[in-house]
Image (cartoon, rainbow, N blue to C red):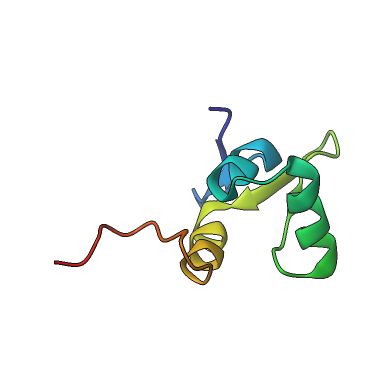
Length: 72
């Protein structure tokens, strides 16, 4: 994986990594960012990166996409 970290050591994910988590196309992730559902950080090269913690919160709100282990 091509994850990076911000200055405060937050893990950053690429659009492809986020898309794989939600089983959508990377373009969909970009549309979510443009719509304000997910904030993005731009690299010096102009590429988008997404905070892993924010992606996890978004995932927790999507039915059938929970990251937690199944309840006993």
